[in-house]
Amino acid sequence: MASAQWGDDQSAALEIVVPAHNEARRLPEGLARLCRKAATLPLPTAIVVVDSTSTDGTGDVVRRWPRHQVPVRLLRCERPGKGIAVRAGLLATRAPFAGFCDADMATELSALDVAISLLAAGNPMVIGSRAHDDSVVEARSSAARRVGAAAFRDVAAIWLRSRFEQERAQHEAAEREPAAAVPQALPAAGPQVLPVGVGTT
Image 1 (cartoon, helix red, strand yellow):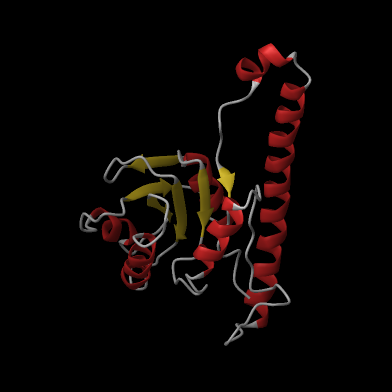
Image 2 (tube, one colour):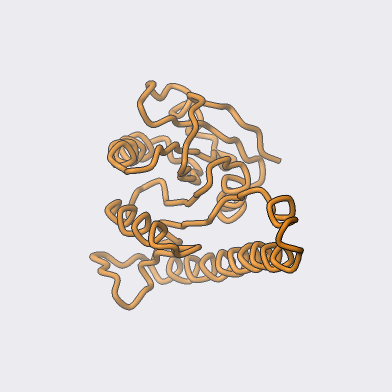
């Protein structure tokens, strides 16, 4: 189960989910970097930190976070696992666009600019990964972590594909209705998933 503690209430067009398990040491620097970057984006942006069963005060870091033009809120997830934390965070978003990145901000945050430009061009989903052939990775992690990251990417891809197929099916069903009924038949706009850093390799 996940429980929410809200930060500043602001209408955000983009929410970025940050899963965090025992990240009290690294989170302040990473969160500060993300807030600075989010403040420069063309869309009003908010951050959701998902505290995944941490025991080191990770949640306290977020609770004490200073008020900023970029709202930061805390979601507590009582089930362990990065994938579970990411899913809980994405399901809790209220913005038209949502994505996630790691607490260490290992992915270059300029990727957000690229992702937003692709979304603005009409792409329904943007997925960034250091496993991509064109990615530049300066330092590789251990073999065990690479295997874990690959498994996480596979699970994330399955979930995202399922979500995308559901959205597409809903829109196709709506298009079969008579033209006059289309506005009533269309589903409410749900989050478009825009992962900015899928796992680590």
